[in-house]
Length: 184
Image 1 (tube, rainbow, N blue to C red):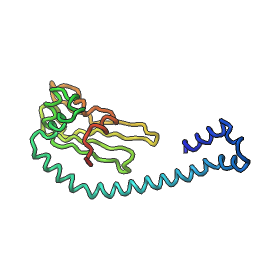
Image 2 (cartoon, one colour):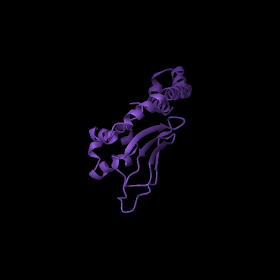
Image 3 (cartoon, rainbow, N blue to C red):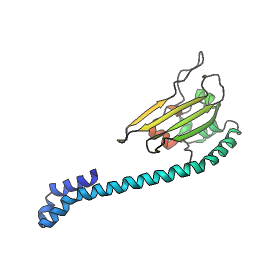
Image 4 (cartoon, rainbow, N blue to C red):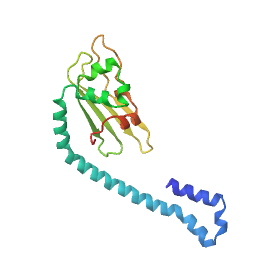
């Protein structure tokens, strides 16, 4: 709607309505109402797309499960994947690499309505660094697009480094661009 209202304001502010008849002025002022109708159609379309996405996410689930079973049988799969990625490899320190040797699976779960966010779940085997076997980073978004990022509070083992690997602290845009999404 903002685009249509802005268009109307631009047209009237530069005086184009003076070039036409009274009928043209009525048409210009009618544009915001057409934009409201268009917004309603766009919202309905977005809801339908989300319905289809939900349906196919459920259909994909058995494939993801099978894929994860295969990945878990490959030693150091996730560490190798991160080190092979052109951007992620530069983020991993030697200490990060030691931690990621214990990463056994990485899952991405969309929020129920799909467009409000997602969680990245890092599943670790028992390791000398922290007590947790599951670390979750959640990205949720308001209607205005403001991100709220939360994560598991890690229970570090005695004497261990108290920082997360850079891959796990990335912001929304970096995570979206760099991490392997479950649909990849």
